[in-house]
Image: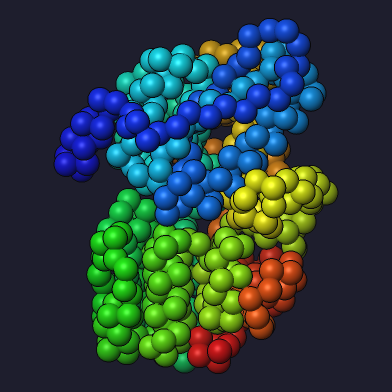
Length: 422
């Protein structure tokens, strides 16, 4: 923790020349100074596919808001920088947004690795801060003006993130006995694995493998072979998109024989990666946050996806937009609703309002609890089934991504063991 904070302070000294400023302005609601909202976002690097999709969703919110007259009679304007999927760029970006650009508000970019290093800078400036998919990022800081748009909420977010995966595993017959864990040596995987170890202890699972690998790893076959050598019943992976692809391919090459495999693999929600991996994903059980079926197929969500998808191809982003875009739009909705309700731009008043009220968003009603996390967790466990090719349109069919957890939202039954779906 001390080393990480020292690295953050060192990075605050400036933003690298490679960081590019972008701004998107809808037509002004009226001739007035805009309300500016600043953030960093992954537009290049390993998590850029998700970051660019989030940006498009935020731009749609900006256009929608300005078309309705803006906020408090003023247009809204987004100011953003490319964080390059690199946490070391983040402190400098937020220092510039606050001190140089004088942004009225700052919100986070995408992912725990980008949310966590921004919090100390925002704390120092005593500003409101909304996070996007940060997994329990505020646990060390306990900053009272931080609010997280992440369904992995509740009193124990790290456990909530993996609860569905292990809930499904422990319902099977014969019941799994042991567990292998692997994840990148980075903020999100470390947080996720901490939660997994807590669940494993609670479930009486024996941990037979637990390793972190460098984020720069290129060949994942030795990792999967080492996992296979422990003969695990459950394999939980906490990975970001580049390593997710490598691990899934290695599992196919090695012939991984676990009973249940997946858990925390970021990237399997991305349309481009789904199309790339195709049938290799069959049998994987993984977390997800939103799919446009079951209770999530509301008129508002479907209308947003229609607009998003009409713009996606021309913007070079995720063509379906199921994973991150609805939440990126929704955390902007929270900020906008709070501003209109309080008739204020005061960060303290807005934080007080967000802390004590519920918000109607594209992803449902959202209320925040301790540490700014969602008061109740709403994480899905889904299984890839019946993926027959590398065709995009099949992923519009609920039969290819079956919701297993929570029970109230189930759209099908698990295929168990993992090899049975291959």
